[in-house]
Amino acid sequence: MKQTNIKNAKTALTITTVLTLFVAGFEVLMAYSNYKPGMNIFDIASYVTANTQIYCLILILINLILLPGAVLLFKQNDISLKKEIAEKKTLSRDILYGIAALAVTEIFNLAYTFTLSGRTDLAYTNTDTSIGTTVIKIIALTFVSGICKEIYFRGFAKKFCGPVLGEWQALLLFNIMFAMLDWYNIGFSFVAGLVWSWAYQKTGHLLPGMIAHGGANLIAIIYVILMSGVV
Image 1 (cartoon, helix red, strand yellow):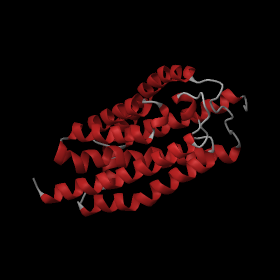
Image 2: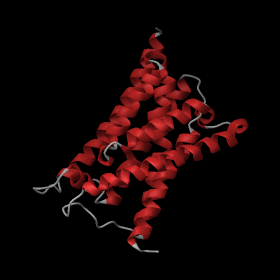
Image 3: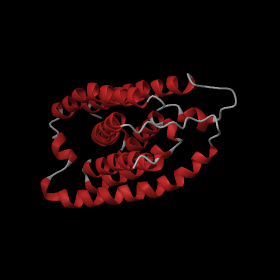
């Protein structure tokens, strides 16, 4: 096995692990700083995004701080990140796969909403739907997370750890880290990540996963606004 492959895998794992531990650590801090006796795991998890603007700002900053290292890793290995995301000749197909992956994700999301019934009166419910908060949520969750996380958790897995571990083994490992980062949604990210990995494998491009990932987050934002009765 080439030493270059091992070095690339270590670099990819390091960047993704830093992202995972930093964000997950912040989420745990936010959740347990609001702990009250009698809370269950669903109640605790509800406080991760209680301060939505700070949470979104953290997501934006850490993803963008790590992005230059990700771009450099692709460049050093003569891999066009632009072509890894999408190519003109397959753009229509990739968009269709993205929409299909989004539809499947939302079907799983409907099942996930039933888990929220496990929350008690101690759960956080005062969702901020102000214009400022909504804008930063769209930037952080739809665009930054939707694009950057697919590069880290899917692109890194296949291109740099796949040659060492095997593609699906690497995608599964990185998907576990993805689920750890989003632990507060109680396993939904793991299932969604498998769908987005499948779309990546079928098309060879990251765009379908980015569409499904960012789209799912955008739908969640719109859903919260509608349920709050703001519009």
